[in-house]
Length: 217
Image (cartoon, rainbow, N blue to C red; front, side, top):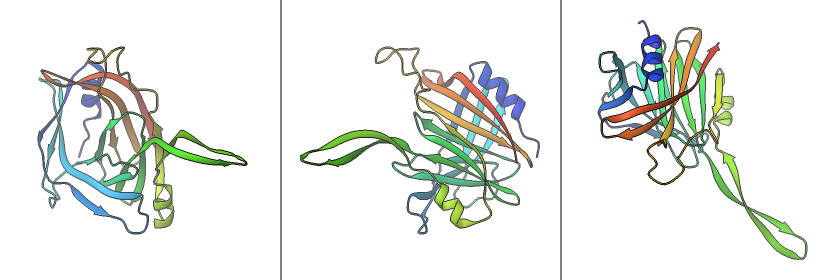
């Protein structure tokens, strides 16, 4: 299967659209070995409509084997993960400070990770003084899960804190809703795009292509 990497880059660099024409049930199960890591994803077929300058993610049923893209969900205070056969695509959205990982988890498989990274409350005890309470960022990463599983290789890690442009005021038309990752994974190389989107009357429009990462493995 030839991947549509060039066509995808064209959409992302020309302010095109991303669409999710059909919603489907997610494949969700809790990994008991490391409770901070959960399989949470849906299967999709990724296509590109060059005439409409649109990337399409058509969700498939939870039992289908006929898909080329995994859509990794967002979970609070956890790492959500999802596998896909290669060559194939990994998509995950709703980033505003979380961290994206990609792992090689099988001979013909990679697993995408949406690792929650948010503010948590830390209480520090102090001698003869009231405890100090502060808010600090904490990443709920997947490293322990893949280390314990054996045989997995980290392909990339990309943080996003501070990169989303919310706009100067609430409702600023120049603001962005979220950041997104889309990896096009070949046998030995992953091309990963980081881009922002904004919901408009016409649909979810690409605002910026922030970066293009090429990782060999």
